[in-house]
Image 1: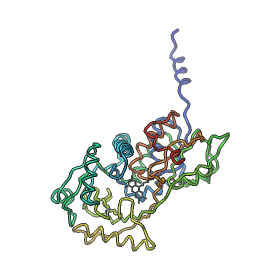
Image 2: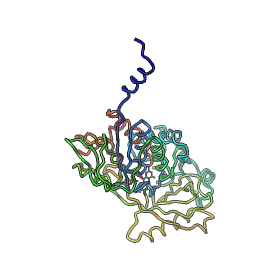
Image 3: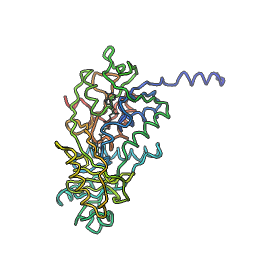
Image 4: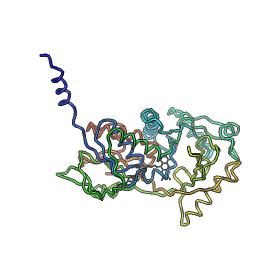
Length: 371
Ligand SMILES: Cc1cc2nc3c(=O)[nH]c(=O)nc-3n(C[C@H](O)[C@H](O)[C@H](O)COP(=O)(O)OP(=O)(O)OC[C@H]3O[C@@H](n4cnc5c(N)ncnc54)[C@H](O)[C@@H]3O)c2cc1C
């Protein structure tokens, strides 16, 4: 039997999947990415957050990397996430990722060599360079090292601008953004999480995503979920904007720095920031003096401000991502290196939430590993 146009329209409409309603708690880089990917895949998203740019996110060094010190499975996941930033930059023009590369000499020579050997074997682009090579890449370094690694494919992003771009993208796909809202607890009904209580009242949804950074711990606890997450502090100094002094990320012994799109030199004892100590201003002043001493032609460079961020770090250092066992309707995403990982986490979390099928790429990152 032939269908009339009207019949076929009805058939199409009735066979469309029901739009899932998802609440995302958190508007840092992780909540923003999950919201964008969910909205892009057709979910009805509501972002609920106390602020519109995150808490750890604005205090981040925001280096996008799959650098040394990680087992191969995590290196591969980070690399996959780095590719994700390229996809996201196509989806969201103006995202502002800068594939500037890094110069690295923050370890003894043998360790640098071992890092280069291992990661080159894994397919990461690392070149060994001498003093002239360093000076050619970073002509404003006061004392370029004799030997360094040039890690070609690393980059950085301005994390607040990127999170806001993703949130704006989600909004353009119909997401609602509710800022200034404090989520106080999860609501459960017959063993399923069905919503959240907030300072604006209760909200219901098919799924609740906790992407609230360090705030995830207290919210998960309201459903008796214990998250082994630590929050070490990291202090980063920010200069006033200045002319171009750095071309890429500089990983010197005891000092990591880069120049932001706005022209600020930002630096920490390492990328995770310095220990703020008892006197944060004194720590910031000393750190800024060390950063200046590494550069030439910066006599008039001034410290503008410093940030102290608390890094949401699961105890074994790897992300916690997924639906906790026995808690249908709930999804958790909390991690360090959230800036590097955001595109992969957003994509895979949205797929798992909307399809109900676990993705093997996330298998190492389930909460259940903590027992
Ligand atoms: C100093 C420092 C350096 C770093 N360097 C790097 C780096 O170089 N590379 C890298 O990849 N990563 C780095 N990180 C880690 C990275 O910045 C974080 O992993 C990432 O920003 C975490 O983002 P998030 O969205 O999970 O959390 P956050 O940015 O903390 O956002 C949390 C959100 O949840 C909301 N929220 C919390 N509780 C509630 C509640 N109860 N109700 C409503 N809303 C709530 C907040 O308002 C906010 O919107 C660094 C972090 C720091 C602090």
